Length: 215
Image 1 (cartoon, rainbow, N blue to C red):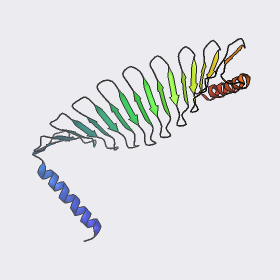
Image 2 (image 1 turned 90 degrees about the horizontal axis):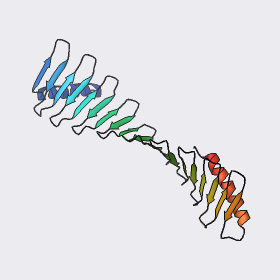
Image 3 (image 1 turned 180 degrees about the vertical axis):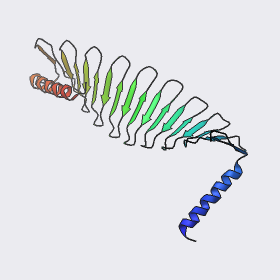
């Protein structure tokens, strides 16, 4: 038998089996089709091509002619996926989640906090107060708050900060600490002999970190 004919007859057989498994099937005057099976599942199809289903556990499902699918379970969780490959979810606590085909993931909770992560290992977060932070795959981190303060840290263990008053600060993993105020005064506490050189390096690192920070 030709493979195409075999597939056609298999489709007929599967459809027949599906119809035979239905306990009841009715059509109303609007063209909607209703069916139930012996397991207690309910199916509905409308003339627009939308399909709905519900099971005895309280779960419901739907699909539209565009290929989008939807589901909700008895616990109050909801799910959706579209033909572009995006996926969405929400729970009864007010949290929402989504993911796209590029591997990016997003979330938001009922408190107004938002989160994101990309497939490169970068992550981002922002809270309802307007504070934000980020971390990249190289181990660098950045942050900023609603008061105008900025923060950064790199994978080498250096820390940087700048406040809204124009003051800036640097600390390195060797115990060195450096600061500059808005008046141009410089301060340092360095366990090494060459404090001036270390301070200069720290200040340059601060400038670079804050320049590259997204905040």
